[in-house]
Length: 310
Image (cartoon, rainbow, N blue to C red; front, side, top):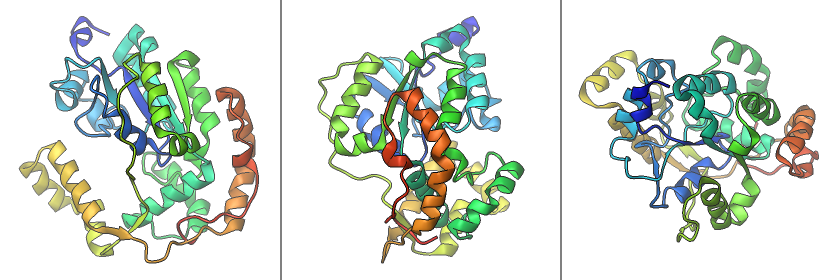
């Protein structure tokens, strides 16, 4: 890290994901703390987006953390757990020796449920048109062809593989692992555990009586697809008219407006779920050792009642 970079107010805490594991809820709880300043948008995607990373750390701070100088902790909630090789090396290149003082919080969810929720999001945004079973079959070639596209339904739940890579770059003491079940049952207690981990005041009143990222479907598939994957001409026009933050906010608002609750919640076929559980067995056994938690409930095949049909 150069002298100029030391003077920047770079974030020191990263809420790494996993995506679709409850990080949006935890973000909403932690953001209520007066000593914690998250980026101006929840997910800056600086370290995992080559087009942003090339702009440099000063651009990152000016875009997302301007005015956060007085905060005890600056934080980035981009879900990057599934990209350890790319992100870890970029963090070390940006922070230098200070990278060993960063704090990381990881929320983990039953990987089968996470994969299913991931798929539903892609369906809602009209990005995914295949059945879940077919999407799993296509995943190896899709992720090989476009590794940064969000089609790694199975891959992104290989937590042990990801965590092991992170721990090859950073110490175990820099990480706090949270299970989705704990976050659902005791959200305030989990938030305070994170506060203690970050070294900020723990006796802060936190409101957790609300839901985030409720499963939903598009009101109009055509409009949702237009918002999620706009033609190049529209992208060029919006870039001229709106800043990066404004474009993200507009897209978020429009996506929310175009979403509605399911008329009838779809269900994941038990045979598809149990096949996934078998595929995750070895990884979950390694994960138990890495984080010191019993994950038997995640490993046992069972009938699954969830949010959509495969």
